[in-house]
Length: 283
Image (cartoon, rainbow, N blue to C red; front, side):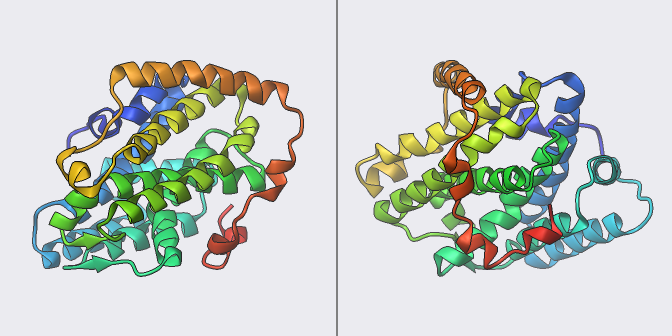
């Protein structure tokens, strides 16, 4: 397997934000993303379910042994030790990917949607926060919130593409898509104040990523009906919009410096997630 910068290939919004990170931190984030991306590709590639299951099991088994010949797995093991990432978090990610390797996928409740979003993206937010030096339990939970918010944005954007692959995370209606975006807004809001606990030299990149990704959902909210949504193709944030959100992030950055204590930090609603995941074993 040749070395690739998966972050620059598959995650242009994150890669844009990564410009504001120190080189060594960006490289660690890139290694984490590569690990997650390769797992995603196993679930998403055009292949039989049996072959996908075999490839997934092989990848997971390689992670459990002392050494493998897969540099992406070995890089992730280094991150796990260096940043004190709980193996429970990685296993949660494995569970989310395994859930996607089915002939047909359906989620039937908000709890199922949030659990899945935690497994495939909240875990990534939590691991990313560890890499960025976050130690506060409240702030680590807020990183989960940001990951979930971004996954809900993904699901709302990719309804048509997912249905082609027999994946039905939410119903095919503009009402349900917009309702999912509105849930994501709660999670975006609940992630904000705890970004203050990220070291100041790393904080701006996360604020930019948060704003740029959130912009996708807000563009979806402006679509009038499902027929227009279907014809819109993959909704993305263009360079001008990214630049604009980057400028707005300066305001966020200053706001976090000025704020000394905010009661909203202590009123984050983790009820649904806490019913499903024991965070004490993960943070």
